[in-house]
Image (cartoon, helix red, strand yellow):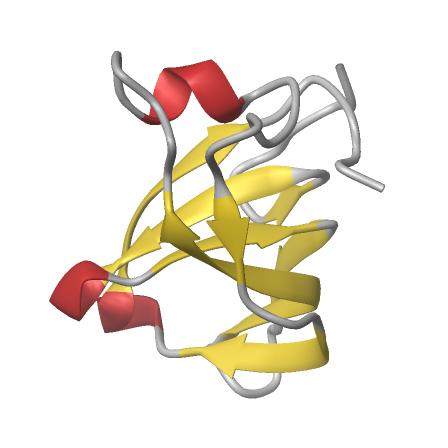
Length: 91
C-alpha cells in the first residue's frame, strides 16, 4: 500500500458531501489553494457491493458503475468527509 500522510494519498476512495464518492489515483492538499487536488478521478455511480465501500479497496466489482475519468479536479476541503486508501490503482 502506498505511503499515506495527512496531506497526501495515493489511490483512494474520496467520500464527499451530497452523496458523491470518487476513486482517485492521487489526492493531495494544495498548500496554495487550501483545496484537495485529485488526479484521474472517477465518480462511483453505483458501488455494486453488498458490504459497503470497503469491498472496493482492491478495485471495482462486476456490478460497480463508474463515470468517465476526469484528468484532474479540485475538491473543497469542507466537502471532503473521509478518505479510504486503496491497495492499488484501479487501472
